[in-house]
Length: 196
Image (spheres, rainbow, N blue to C red):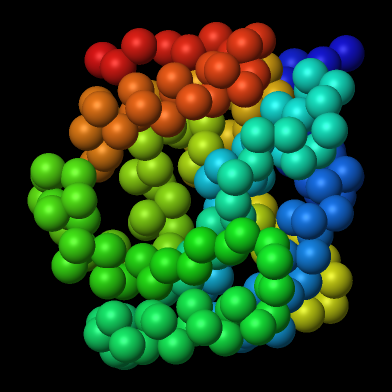
């Protein structure tokens, strides 16, 4: 039976085993843990894309351009503070492309980049809730004791069922459509639902 059709608890239990098929993702998770960032998650694309690769029988890193490491630190919203974390991250992750972002400061640049205002996020989870596709609204971390934590506000069935569902909460339509165009070329099996 397909994982996306299992009971929710069994779907969630399958996620760590599926994600562990991607050694680069596991290395990023372990490295992220050493940075001790507040409220951190490895989120979005690389997480769901590893699931898509598992379901479609592709190499675990197929189509993965980078790994998003997000955290939420409202104590210092300066670019310099975020850049210091990015610089440290480069030392930790080496050649693995990891994009590190402090979600507490996204509202400072979001409108200029995407054309719509963004209220300040109150947590990294708040940011995940607003990702352009609910399917990609996933965050994962490995705890200090080695346990796996998953944040999936919209569940994981769509990821396992290769369904991309828009999330109009924050991102504009053109952001969603640009992402699904790239994803569809790498994973033609996806069922992409239209923007509402």
